[in-house]
Length: 251
Ligand code: NAD
Image (cartoon, rainbow, N blue to C red; front, side):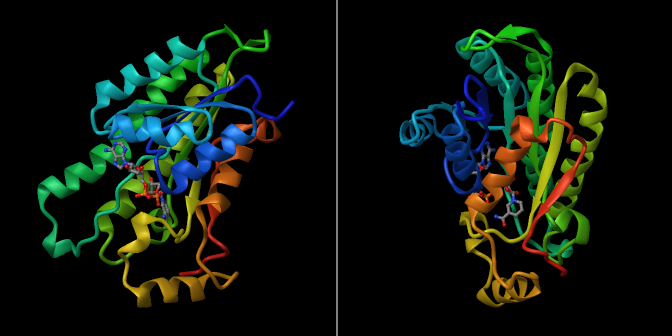
């Protein structure tokens, strides 16, 4: 038996990058995995690769997030793991920011995560019978913070603020939900090679690689492995933590 056998996992924004690597890692560990993406067809196609399921969801739509969690819970008999991964990074110096850009980042990165935690918390609090016949209550929620939420980054004020909010959400939700057996943690990646960071100038990426103790950028599966650990029973006494996955970055 693998560590996540008979568990149901939901990964938002799971069609590429860290989300896709996480979905694969959770599926490899035995979980039934549902990924969401803004495009339902793409999400379904991507999920086929690891034997999972795909759904369309824009996490900026607060009510739709709740409805999707309910749908997944009903279809698979419960929810054991949530990875609220969907996020956007829009760069811009403070003087250039427009209200719409600020709201969009906060809607996706913060409100989207709040909606997912709220709905998953309700679903995980219920007693249910897993596919292997065991009775379960509780679950594990993992959020995607970022090193910039702690250190800040010029040209990324709103993104950094949104990720600091995500870290605070993890710590706060852990306190509210711990009594129901629900753990809530966040990972705070450094610079990971994905589409999100592909647009950063080469000299910025080189500086970030040099600033890491390991002297290189990270890969999505290096974040996914830590998320899989937090999702499973090996981390059963870990909650309210924001775990750096940054190669020892000192900006
Ligand atoms: P990515 O751009 O490759 O993937 C992001 C995913 O989120 C995509 O599948 C995208 O479609 C989805 N998404 C974006 N907006 C959405 C919305 N409104 N509704 C539904 N899905 C939406 O990025 P990534 O690098 O894999 O990042 C994943 C998470 O990790 C993000 O929350 C990001 O902020 C965080 N993160 C990334 C890095 C990094 O260096 N790559 C560092 C720290 C934190």
